[in-house]
Length: 384
Ligand code: MN3
Image (tube, rainbow, N blue to C red):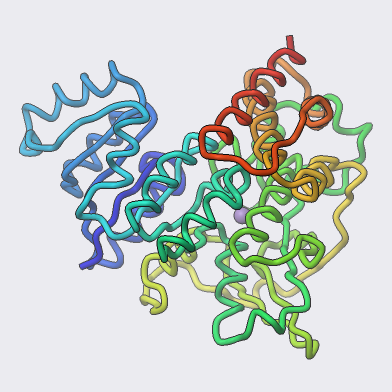
């Protein structure tokens, strides 16, 4: 029996993680957390019987507690806020913490989980984008493994098995190109959130789908790959591959390219993270190459999708700059989803925020969260 907690169990990855757990059968859920969807959380509690649940919103937590008190799950501890999230991340009985919350909210609980020597299955890339050296150093110090749940990083991780890190020539990070692939800057000024939310291949949450449309998602993934695999960003190349079948690859110094393919289904990387180094059989859809027929690859259009270059710039600057990039991006994306700014304002807001920021190179967790907060408030000032 593997005992796990899921932070963000009512989001897209959380729901799919529970699907994988139904398939694996040897997983015991110790804690679940949600932002506000207590209807779904209640159903998950009744099915998986965790010891502890937490909801960000206090009133919602009280409502859930009231509801559960009348059920067979009346003994489940119901907490709220960041404190509750941290308790779920550090609960004594769990060995692995699946981090699948949206955005920077995942930084502190992941950090605390690592300090309690929990293995991390990481879907929330913002944790490594912002927390970079802080999170990875803490993981090394505590002998904690961070297993990727992001499909590209899982593909890279799988392609690295049995090979020496010294023989990597480059990492080929594939990108679908999102719903606006092939469009130019002038085409993008009037696109709406509804247009941007139509992802061609992956069914994901709103924030990451917008990141996919701006290609910031790929920029964040370059930074994520740098920290996960300890490789220089100049060895990470983004290649647009619209079919999303090759999930990423590693090129070795002898010219061999080893990649991982499959249908676009997050359940496969989730399952691998939960069973590593083993694999578990499942009845998920399988890849039929003859049905796919053609796989194509192209260079990313960095001029149109400026967010990708901004991400490279942030990680090359280093220190707290990626945290500020991420904070400005989260703020801009939320405002775009609310219809308050245009699609092409997103990169501009991030760029202006980065330009105004004085980077800090050695930082504590509190300084990291301050940089994040600074990025958010500065981005909000620009928007006003
Ligand atoms: Mn991805």
